[in-house]
Image (cartoon, rainbow, N blue to C red; front, side):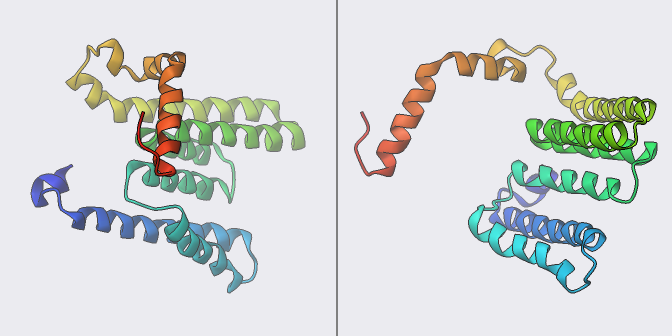
Length: 197
C-alpha cells in the first residue's frame, strides 16, 4: 500500500511484484530442490519447470494469492534439514504469514505439516511426547503470529457488520444456492457467447 501511495496505481508495481514473486519462488524452489536432488544440474529442473509452466499456464498476476505460497515454500525449506522445536515454530510462523495473505492456504499448509509430523514422529519414531510438543509449538506459533498480523486491522474496525465478517461469509454464501447457480449459469453462457438471461 505504501508503494501505491508513493507511485500511484501504476502497472509498474504489479509487474515488479510478479517479477519479485517469480525470482523468490525460483530461489526457494532451487534451495528445496538442492536438498532433495543429488545431481547438481538436475536440481535446476524443478524451478525451471515452475517458471516456464507456472508463468505461462497458471496466470501469475501479482495478487495476494500468489504471495502466500512463498511462505509455504519457506516453511517446507525450514523443515527439510530437521524438525527441531525452533524449526517447527518458524514453520508455524511462516504458515501464519501465508494465512495472512490467503486464509485457507496457511491453515491447510499447517495441517499438512501436522500430518507429516504425525507420520514421522508418531508412526515411524513412536515419539508421541515429541509429536504433541511439535503440534503445540506449531499451533501456538501459527496463532501468535497470525494474531499479531491481523491485530492492526481489527483495531481499525473492531465492530464489523454481519456481511463483513469473514467467519460468516462462507456460511451465508453456501446457504444461498441461487447465487452459485446464477454465477455458474452466467459464466457458462458468457463462455459460449450466449446472451445473459
